[in-house]
Length: 117
Length: 113
Image 1 (cartoon, one colour):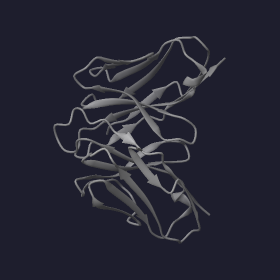
Image 2 (tube, chains in turn yellow, purple):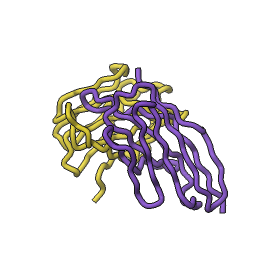
Image 3 (tube, chains in turn green, red):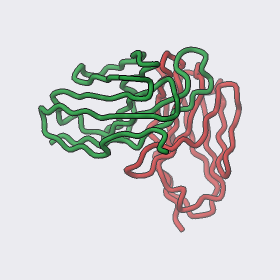
């Protein structure tokens, strides 16, 4: 009965490869997010989706492409992986997306540790 | 641009002490503030969420306060235990579409028995 799940938990790959990380939430939330936690443990937003529509796209290389097949899933595809992409990627969801949301607590998945060699 | 700062970066206390973790943010126009706990190699666990209209929230031994006008929040942990050892993260919602959280860099707490 995991609320926000991610697969895989660990991902080790070589430079230049293409990889995907999957995220699913069973909370019925409208909004999903991808955050990146760098080697200094700093968390930063990458993307957010509300009802399958892209809302936030921070300054992220276009090698990163999120895809939301439905409201409960938000996958992250990364092309041409680079050493600097090594990080922990967290998926999150919240019950409200757009304006008016004073109560939209975010729930995080367990993270995917990506190591690029 | 909203920035979140947490002080101290690390804290070591003996078991049983009461302690306070500090969080400050530069733009007082927030929708809410959330405190998380992160254990090594693990995900984030939400501890408390304070809405912008609230002054504090309590959960068990945890009490979080919010002073929006001064851009400050504190997380008070009563009677600390070794199991409280973790990194505590403070995050504010920007209110923009998608309500992304802006995080501080965290306070790493170590409670010794």
